[in-house]
Length: 285
Image (tube, rainbow, N blue to C red; front, side):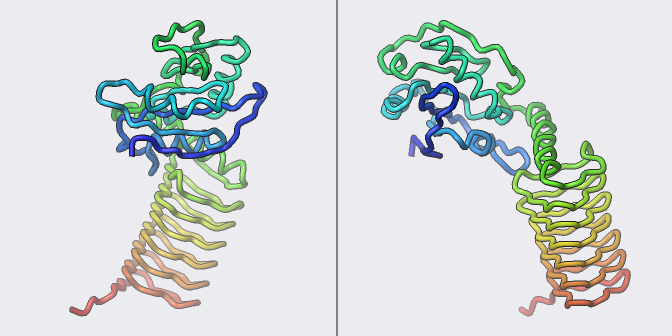
């Protein structure tokens, strides 16, 4: 399918017209904090109508865009690798194009067109240039650019979580997936990696050097310097340092002492597991 409609919503802002965004897709393999660059753009610009257009071999994508343009005042055409773009910057660029009555405005990466002008002209002559927020128009393609984007996007994720009541003791040392959810009142200490579709409840304490991957942590849990991988941790559980919890379920009010390995096992409610215990599910052949 060469054209994908990601969203269909009406955007009426200060410019009082409908606008749309067309993402020109070359590749969708690059991931940053568990999301592709297209996913990041879709997430950030979800208030707009967004269309994804596969990049033709000859580079001529206009014929694929024109059928969708008629209902809009202005359209933006952007590369799909702008993972750092923000709603505020796109909103401001659309507003600038409308105020200037621009027919074709060039961005650092991409363009904004008056829709009627785009349909009726085979050759575009740019009458203005949007010169703000250059860093947001950085295409993310190389390893260095991915590392740079990861730092910026991690700061944004953490800032949003802080606004919802999550406490970070050393936010610069943590990596948080875009898909992770953390409840209000929870405290995240230094050097924590919270990856995949992890869900952490309210009033939890995630102490230093924890890695949590695709797991569910219920309210009031405390985890210290351990790895939790694809596991369910119930309310009021305490997991001491240097434990590995893999594909397991830990019942309410349980306590796991230090240096334990629990793999494919269920720990019952109120159970206390002594230090250096190894519990593994036995697979019967």
